[in-house]
Every structure is written in structure tokens, then in C-alpha cells.
Image: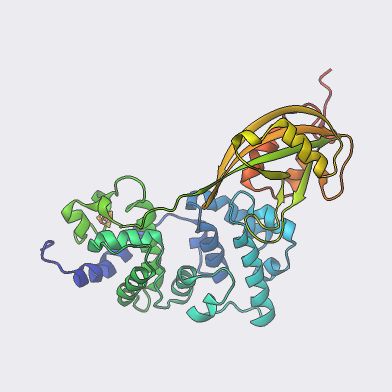
Length: 371
Ligand code: SF4
């Protein structure tokens, strides 16, 4: 029976097997408590680059601080960035606020309820629009991301390259007939859940507990790991950077990044490109401090750390330098003040921790003399 099944039949059977499995096995994630489009939208944006387990606490903290679209539209940028701190890809947070402003100002505060209107919101692509439209409004709009492509290409033993937008479009078209009235939400969420928990991206899929195992062609052929087929990975650019931990009076210098490009508009520890690994030297750090207007006094210690972004790797060497002054263009804060009010991208967090260990860098209010 299994071997004779054709492709259409395999896909069609998903419509009967998946909903029951999802209803019985769905993880109780906080954004599944209701179908409020604000909640689903926020969770989908947070989940774009992060696993559900990690997103849960961010999601709950964010909603406690900004419970409505209106409050999101009015939030101050620094507070928004603080709520997003650690999730990375900060343009997602900025787009959320921009879209909230659009809903409040242009749409009378009502969340859009068609796929096309949802897709017009900043930061919302076809996947997120499909997720919101199907989960919140029961519309026949497949939400196809890497997880769903993996499930689908294994189910049908499809060797189309999943990095090709035409393949993605075709998968959407083939899934659409499963989106029957009353089932749209559960099909979208079931496919996502299956991709996250059973037909997993790393290591062998758990076919033994998969509701689709009797109809899955890759399982039948025992070729699960041959799918999905991907284009060759692009090589990441490597940058070497000198990072300056400039200290004055128990405080660390920060500055704002420019409003475009990587980590746009966020706070950073001052840093500059070095020609190569060996070019990040104490002398270079002192010269960089002077170029920023500091009067560098003493080089205390150094450390290094590598941070990997999607398209670039930063190999950073940081130097702790004391300064006689606080030059213009930089702000000086204690580590505790930074924790409380400044969103610092993950790339710089290890240096903040490093700076905290330097004598004299604890918050003076909380500083107890051990004597
Ligand atoms: S049977 Fe295995 S390969 Fe097929 S969809 Fe399920 S987990 Fe994935």
C-alpha cells in the first residue's frame, strides 16, 4: 500500500493524519493560548531565528511590558531594544514597532485580516503573513519555512533545491488544498511542530513517532537525510576588530552605531576594523583611543572573542584602557547602568562581563568594602 502511493495521495493524507497528532502532541507554548494576531505575530517574528524554548521567556517579558499593539507603537526605542536584547537581528524589533505604528495610525488600531494586507506590514514576509492569516483568520495560506520544506521534501522525496524560490512556491501550491475551512490553523501549526520536534533539522528524524511515517517516501526508502537538497553554503566574510574598553571613573565607554547596516542604531563598545589578526595590538588600541578624543592613561589587560553573524565573523581583540577624560561622542556608564538601560548586542556581552571583573568597575551604590 505504502509503496504504491503516489505523491498527491501522500500529501492528501497529511490532512487526515496531522491535525489529530497536533492536537494531542502540541507543546503548551504561551503564544498558543489564544489566536490574538498580535500574539501570533510577535511569536512568529521572535521565532524566526530562535528556538521556541529560548523565545518563551522573551515573549512573556515583552507582552508584560507591551501588552497591546498600541503600547508597542508608543514604546521608546531604548526600552524596545532592551526587551529584545539577546535575541539578535534587532531590525526585527524596529520593524515590529514600525508596523504597530502603521496599524494604530493607518488602520484604526485593527490588525489586518487578509494575507495581502498582513504582508504589507514592515518585517512581514510570505511566511509570517501565511502563519498569521492561517492561524488567526483560518485562511488557506500555507506558511512555508525551512522546517516545513524539510518535512515536505522528505514526505515526497522531492529533490528540488529548497533554496530556489520556485520550489518554495511550488510547495505552497501543493500544500494549499490541505487548508480547508476550520483546519488552516492546525495544518500550519502541525507542520511547524512536526519540523521542530520530530522531523528535526540536526541528526536523524524521529520517524518511529512521526504521524506521517506510513505515507513518507523518504522513510520508505530510508533516505531521510538525503532531503532537503540545498544549494552550497556561502562562505562567511571574516573581519578582525580592535575593541576598546575605555574606562573612566569606574565607568565604561559606549557609543551608538549608525542607523543603517549591521546592528543599526544599537549601543556598542567602541571598535574598529583591524587589517588582520596581528594588527589588533595594544599600540593600535591606544591610537584608537586617542583618535576618539580620549587621553589614554594605562593599558590594563586584554582578551579576545569571536562572534558569528549570518554573513560575517568578527574576530575581536579587546583592550582595557583607562582614560583621563570622557571624550565627546561617547557615553560612560557603570556595568550595572548598562544592564539596566542599554541594549548591548550579544557580540559585545563577553566584554561587558570581562569589564565587570576589573577592580573599581562595580556599581558604587552597591559596593561594599569587605574590610
Ligand atoms: S517519517 Fe521521518 S522523514 Fe518522514 S516526515 Fe516523518 S520524521 Fe520526517
